[in-house]
Length: 309
Ligand SMILES: Cc1cc2nc3c(=O)[nH]c(=O)nc-3n(C[C@H](O)[C@H](O)[C@H](O)COP(=O)(O)O)c2cc1C
Image 1 (spheres, rainbow, N blue to C red):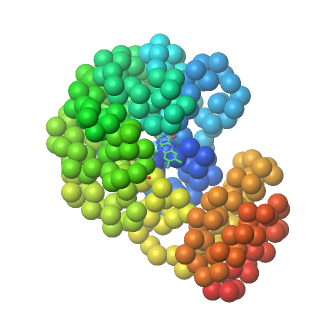
Image 2 (cartoon, helix red, strand yellow; image 1 turned 180 degrees about the vertical axis):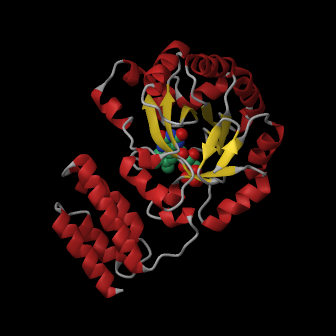
């Protein structure tokens, strides 16, 4: 257990929120491989306050997923705080506020990374949430809106003043989206200057590079997103044999079916493609998997893939 002030992590490598991927089944898989904290994808504060059915489904989690965080987004301090109150009743371990999503739909309505342009508003939102809940609160930020406005120190100060317990930094600007490289120097600078614990994030693609970021930046923990999709072994540093990969896919598939019923088959395809990427015959299996409509079909394809290894 790693104690970062009020926040406890089961280990230093934590799972990033990835919309459409880091749901309850995948979070369980990651925890079983040693991930130190799991987090929902971004969930609309407005949707939570209105108790929208689809939104409320995103909030569901099980005890196995702890330490577990719920990430909310919004731009009105009172709405985000009201959402935090609803979330608190579910007893996650942490509430995270999204201040980094670059998607047009999200920033277009003044949410996500759009907030970075207004540190005062960042402060008001974070403060409203901190005041409303007894749970620890974190914020996940980018380093600025674009290259010309790297105002991360102002944003960090605004968050510290608001009383957040932790800051997660994805080392890119909004303008970069997911291209270019995450700036680990800035992550290091923020870690050095911040009075609260900082988790670094961006471009970790292996267990080794996770430890490289920790060593380079001095961050006590780091967050892994894309590198964990189809590769939960990134949290343990183990290299799985193909048999183990196939077994994990089957386990993940069954968790998806339990969670979503038949819809789980469709939702699992994108995961499977990532799990089997790099195995011999992956291309052929891939084209069958994206057409498969039943558990049996998928199992057969996986068994064939394993035999062909
Ligand atoms: C498809 C996709 C969806 C994402 N969804 C979220 C999200 O819901 N909330 C969030 O804070 N970040 C989200 N991110 C950003 C990741 O959490 C992470 O900050 C980013 O991918 C950089 O880390 P990585 O290089 O380890 O992937 C998303 C990224 C991708 C590629």
